[in-house]
Image 1 (cartoon, rainbow, N blue to C red):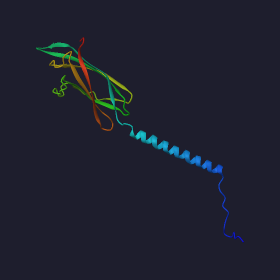
Image 2: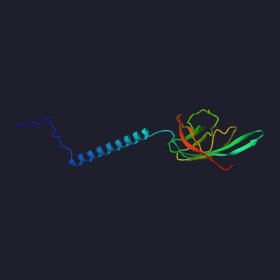
Image 3: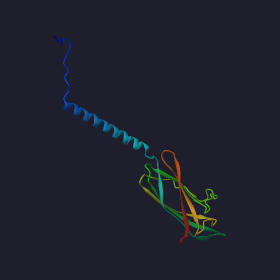
Image 4: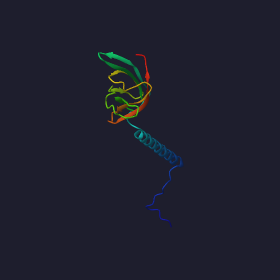
Length: 168
């Protein structure tokens, strides 16, 4: 004699329902993994600004008599693109001697303080006059461009440029 008191008969779930649940779990896992990978890639991408110098020109335009002395006329032209993900503020453009020695200090420094947004290009030209002809046509100089980004980082990029004789 078989006693069945207190025992219930358990029924298994349908194979179709099991397959639907399994597919749902797999889709939810794939979505969660995709979200995690996307956010981790975004957070590991470089932050800040990154500029690329696409053109620098330096010209000697001539000397002019002013009273009993001469003034030497120069022009520097720059073209800078921001390839970073944040804005860049160009704080300094400095001309360094042909021997890469910064012996001139701040004598040949421009302070434009211009902001360049991501993907934009900034171009400008400055004329300046010197009492000495330290910058000479035919010699190569270093133009150092210093910039900051919204995170407080200060970075710089240097480009070699040959001084050319221009028409002034």
